[in-house]
Image 1 (cartoon, protein in one colour):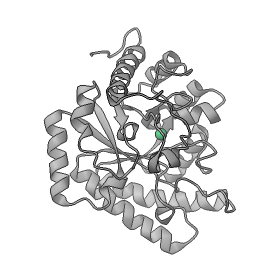
Image 2: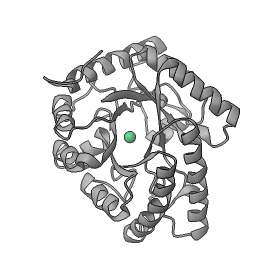
Image 3: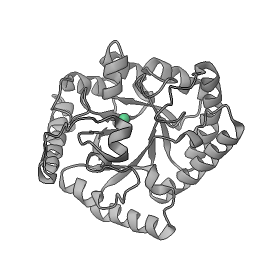
Image 4: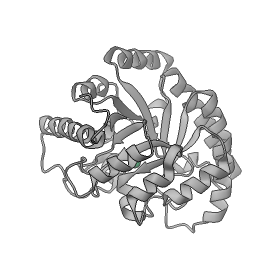
Length: 296
Ligand SMILES: [Mn+2]
């Protein structure tokens, strides 16, 4: 398994310059930096080349996360929105290929955050999403990218709330590059048994997010990291484990994630760095198990 962190732990806006984090996360002991596709919308070829060189020099793997805007909703009932979404994903996937990024994950079968003041048509959106994801998934395959559908809790999504739903959805799409993505924070809300859900995903698990029940760094809350590690080893998971901590209030990130208190306990930048370093060390150790792949 490879271990990563999402840049937004340190930031208050999604579209900020994320290049500075490449070297930083390497120094903190991570293998992976997860970036947001928000920063790729207007990126130039020169900037793409610069970013790729920085990751190669640092020996870092990049992965990409995204919460699509309503105008990028591949499941929309409006054909013009679906056409725009297809255009958007085609552009992003080509950029991912240039960046040597092989994983995109998130609510990329719908939009986020969901506007629950509007009526929800789960059945209709599911059907449109399956057909849209099938089309986008084929483009992803051509670009060498795994298109990973993140199962989200009920407050953030309504199409895929459990691993069982995602498995059924992925089977309907039936494109090998389209995979299941799980996140311990969301699973803790929706799954009867998180460890069974991981086992149900099995070989279809393409990307894995980790965070505590309140989205603090793994090791600072109540989740069963030993059990989670065992379930991942049981399915022979060799993929990415990316932590997605959110502990700071403010900005677009704080508002979208609904951070209304300081979960960092007024931590300095140095303290945030040290907490991340300790968390990845802990996770590597716990997930390695008795016969694991612990090498750090
Ligand atoms: Mn996540």
